[in-house]
Amino acid sequence: MKPITAAVGITGMNATDNPAPGVAVARSLRHEPTFAGKLIGLGYSALDPGFYAEGLLDAASVLPFPSAGKDALLQHLRTVQETFGLDVLVPNLDSELRAILGFERELNELGIRTFLPSMEALERSSKAQLPKLAANPKIRVPDSDAFVTADAIPKLGQRLGFPLVIKGVYYGGDIVHTEADAVFAFHKYVATWGLPVIAQRYIAGEEYNVAAVGDGHGNTVGAVAMRKMALTDKGKGWSGVTVDNPELLTLAEEVIRELRWRGPLEVEVLREHDTGVLEVIEINPRFPAWIYLAAGAGQNLPYYVVCLALGLPIPKPAPRYRVGTLFVRISLDQISQLETYGQLSATGNISYEKKVQP
Amino acid sequence: MNPDPARLRDLAISDSGFVFDPFTGYTFTVNATGLAILQALKEGLSLDLIVRRLQDSFELEGDEDLARDVDEFCVRLRDQKLAR
Image 1: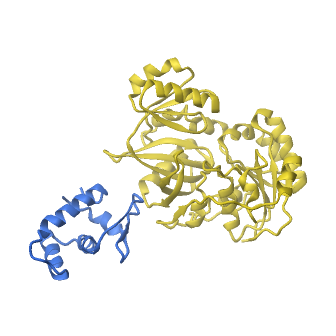
Image 2 (image 1 turned 180 degrees about the vertical axis):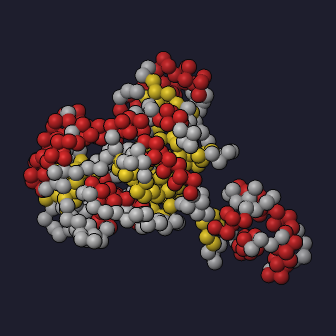
Image 3 (image 1 turned 90 degrees about the vertical axis):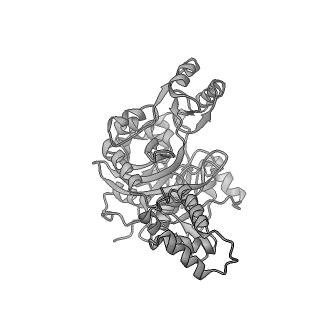
């Protein structure tokens, strides 16, 4: 296969203890021998750690905040294209997907390709709409409700019982044991992500995660299942291992079939302790932060998305991934020069002069 | 206590006693005796044959209740969902 020389823009360059997926997506593309393109890191702060990862990116740009509106974002992407080149855009944050889907046609006219779900599929995958997926008898979803006022909590508590899971509309979830804790969590998520907030029935069980890519016609391009082995105090995976559980993969395939999902997603699944039944607790409409594990295990899902965006062939079926492949995250200090930060702060853009390692 | 033969066969077991269950992603370690029991269970040996193999393989002091030990080990396997 001819090497891919496209310039790929990757959002989500924040990589703190609650990392965005951008760095992992970039590493996955660098991991692929046939990828010889440019990587443009796109973040929201000049201090996004991914901008300082030695040899990872060819260029970087600080995007306007979503509150600036989608026109400002589109205009900025035009500038990125003129400055560095931009053939493919891989957005990695839930909060930016709706805006990008809103100007997908304009991106296409500019020659910037994406491989994303339809707006309808995105809405159906949202936390607020998730229970409706259970209309498909092959997909079990815990009972949940979206609510917009703390006054609803007593009734929700009666219906769903305590403990209860309170979730932000885009990110985060707290297990709460009392109405008072639920009210506190409600206000926290309203302040962070806005309305609505979601209350979901708590299920005792083991969590598994499946990262997958759908082709938009109901077929699964590839899927990798993982169990988290260690969590941070925010509940984020700090290590994990690929598993061989056909039921998990079948469930993810059914979600993709039901939604006719196009592009990357993560299906979060709980296996109930007592019954062993699998329940979909969340669908994230993007790659997870652990996606480099998929590439490391032999199924490079970000690379497939870039190929599909460019209309290039991908292996069918996707190669089997290696079960028992482990990731263990690490915190380390990256050394940089003040000029890099200065350039990003002052202009919002930087081209890295040093040679990027393959 | 019925060990699940299919699940046991899938286990990845190292010589050092590190065990990985590819279905659940769980890992655990066993000592030399546990390793011998696991391997015997994978082979589908009965409790009597497992006890006999342990008697042949390990130096015993004479007051061990091997059948009870194997049974207790199987309880631990149930905790790992490897036995029903």
